[in-house]
Length: 279
Length: 284
Image 1 (tube, helix red, strand yellow):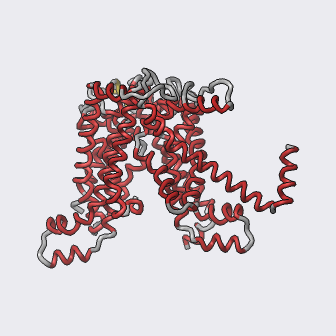
Image 2 (cartoon, helix red, strand yellow; image 1 turned 90 degrees about the vertical axis):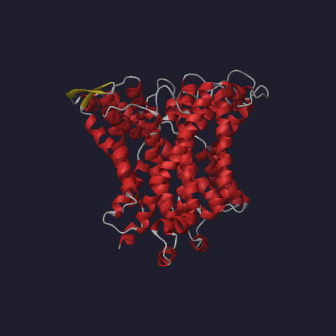
Image 3 (cartoon, helix red, strand yellow; image 1 turned 90 degrees about the horizontal axis):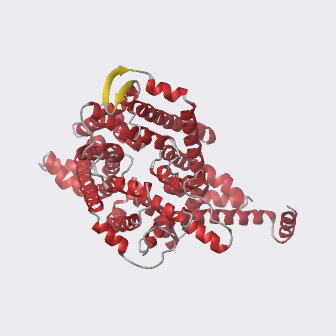
């Protein structure tokens, strides 16, 4: 009990109280870090009435959904190939998945700036292969943001799916094949349903991270691109409007909390075993 | 459409339609996995290659080989001092994480008290919080208390979000230790400190190493929280890098990025033996 006390007090003081105040502070008028003494709905009211914020919120939501789907589409095959691979290949795939976690997001985002630029690796390669006649603008577009965010968040999808694939008994797969199922059917009807917990974990994690991702859209999206985290940063750092920043940050937190809850409901409904498992 | 249709029919004469679908599925899976794996390593590799370019701007492929960008990095006082600041901060963050996290993890696993589950959930909850929200909440709270962004505030804000990882890893390791060893030591007359020092600590090394490494990298690389809690005049490395990339593509960033990658690889190389022994993958 005593051992946990300092950590609990620290987290409560450094994070608990500030978070509670964050919600309240959306109601206070704060000018450049100084409370003016006025209470107003200005912070929250402007967030809810101005269609501009709805647009930013919607864009952020759609990007997060897109990135999550892309991560699932690419991440599941990676995890599956890892599950199938043997020996040295297994180590190599694991290294590819883990290495990005050790390099900072800024480093990787910078890599994408080099790859996606007009004179960058991707355009140069496509031009050299004759697939393109003139360079395509990837940088500072939605395409670039989606590519960069998918890459940065991919390991968070692959790792949970990998973990749940490892728990599958190979006997079930053999049984399906012996009963006359094709490999394709086995994959969709035997393998995937069993990895639903891993998919649920990966999807939830990637979605929250994508919803609040800051460096990638800030750097790959260009000066005019606005997702919710980028706009919150601008509100706080450039406009110095702290009460609106607090209101927006609260919205971000509530939005991602709500999304986690909805995703949990969704996966509960999808899984054919939850009812039997609960008994 | 027509060509596709005939192709299906002719191939179905040779191999069963099912086998055809199986092959297509395997190729599709392999292709997606290949693209994914390539995209995971490509940016880092390209940055490393690019860091040796001779030109004064960023373009691929490099025009020649030189160490000019590395020389420019070490010649810049701003970059060197920001890297030093980030390094020292990350070390202090590890120390605070261990001082707060290890006693907490031990009492959460061994102790029996009311609200233990709630306590654990509370201490691990910051993992799920977006960094930008943590940063803003701390900035506003301490500003209203009369504080301002500073190095101590930045260090404390990093401890907030790295502490859960240290607690979780240490708890996972604690759960696999044997209580009977503690009891044996106690029966032989050891006091609580001696039990910790000579019985528990030797078993916790792998978790501390993994947790410490994790805290270090996360603190050293953190941008989103530092943007709100770091002092304006003395910037840590990630903020410096952010400004260097945001307003123009400073070629020195390639060299810094390559150095950071090398550093992370060294850290992993040093720890990998320990991690394998300690079963990090299972604990995470």
